[in-house]
Image (cartoon, rainbow, N blue to C red):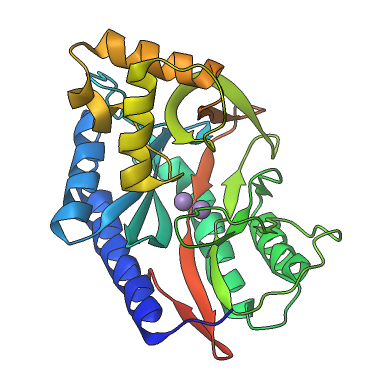
Length: 301
Ligand code: MN
Ligand code: MN
């Protein structure tokens, strides 16, 4: 494929905004703070800086590894002693940066954070054009294990496309010998998850993040089509939260019922929260990088 100057500029700008907001969010998060307040801060800052959220701010606590964003009127607060994953995405005209940081309010988990942070650092030192992603996964696994923890095997890094947060290729967090494809010109995210639990996540039964599925023939209510058109025009298939579409409805219940209907009609996909299977603590760090003209550029650093 190959990127032109305009595309590189937008990818770098998305990365710059993502880095700033990640750092601000990590400093802002404190026990007792509402997750809703932190999510609105993150998404608001992304927009102030000239980007758009590529997905709702993911704020996942302790054994929840990913995919929780606060709902409308969400009352959850950051617990004392929490291990909080802040995972945020920025897009500029569809060009995406995806980055995450973990903050711990419990000193017991400093080592866990360090394992994930170091795995990301070592993985980024390893990546280069032509390398097999199984090699990257091996570096991540070896780093995390050497520090006494496990990587989460069924969460992965990924290739990124324009308007696509996951464009089809996965970068394993362990030495997956079946992951034989090689890095080439493109955009990628690496995100090692470390845990003291089982090393796998399972889906929970809370869904607060959604994305549109391709429009297909069927009988839909007028409201479904209004919502679909609005979200498609703004985001295509990038993930969204109910919080961003409150104004389309008179009541929160009306909004939620329509989203439920759209899931039943396969117009909307819901992402359940992902919970560590052994109820272990989970840490995650993530950066986005570009491979362009044989060079690696980390956009979110
Ligand atoms: Mn992410
Ligand atoms: Mn990611």
